[in-house]
Length: 436
Image (cartoon, rainbow, N blue to C red; front, side, top):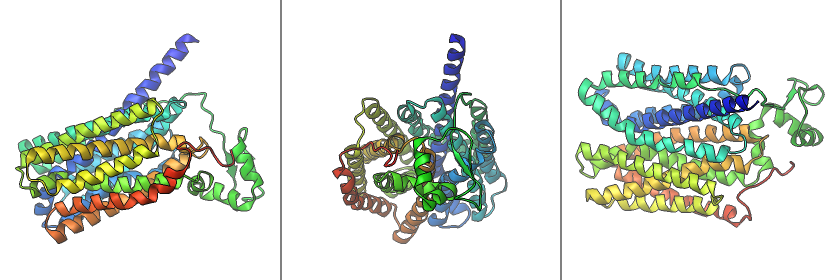
């Protein structure tokens, strides 16, 4: 028995290590895209808005595919889905390097890569929850530390590849590096004693034909008693249920969408900001390393706050305020050290806010509503990310400088703060299910 527990513990930590690698590559590749932004604009004689939109589509599709990935897990295993996603993530970059001749080719290949990242993320995160059911907030926060490790590392890697091998070959090599996600998928395992109690309602008979596979929990019994509307929502639109059963969840979603917009714009245009502020290219690329290191520290701070049970809405609002002030201040700077210092501050705030998001979802919704809550957050994030890349690119093209992009992002963070007041006025950050 002790040997079985030890083996199970070892396999769980392999799943954790796989999650860290996935976060590293998914986040690092998005940040690395900023290195080739200007190159692709010139190569395809295109605009910043279109190329930035292609980049944001990659990240957005990785989140928009989440509900589909959740449904596919009813058919395929977490391992199969993760392996498939890892293959698609690398194949998208390789196809970009081999065949991209027009800007729409970049759209197609980056969408493929984004779908691959999405399949690995949803399968890996839910597998992590199955392996660490009692500590998912803390464990996921520590896995998210590699988010900014990738951001600090991958831009430098891609820039070196581009200098040595050219744009096309660097994309092919980057795709080959991304195929390291395939063995990460192989390492995913799910405990055999995991029970997923659920109610299956046959389509066309939402009120009458209910097949109970296993023992129903209290929430599901409550749904049965509450009438046809909730039964219909449970059966066909489960992604909206967390908003009904967990009232403060909506404020977390507002916080999430603001962070997703600002983070995507920051990631794509940080290097471009450096060149707009008259920095040489090597110093502009180094800003991504500064932002990655500070983001890592922000993630570590967030993980520590969850570990000591001090993460709350006040910290979330402070992260928004810090991000707003640093982004508004950097547009007036011309000294490299001051620009790097403010980049450090914005990276610290963004790292903290993203860690708060993934750590607070398991705390703010019950285990029954966690899968749909997680899926709907990623779905809405994906939609906002599309807007971020496109709108930030439009601002860049219209105004002629990236400093206006960062100014807009800072004002947006300040504008959202009043919407957090109802959340601040609640007595609790952790809310139980209204009918659990």
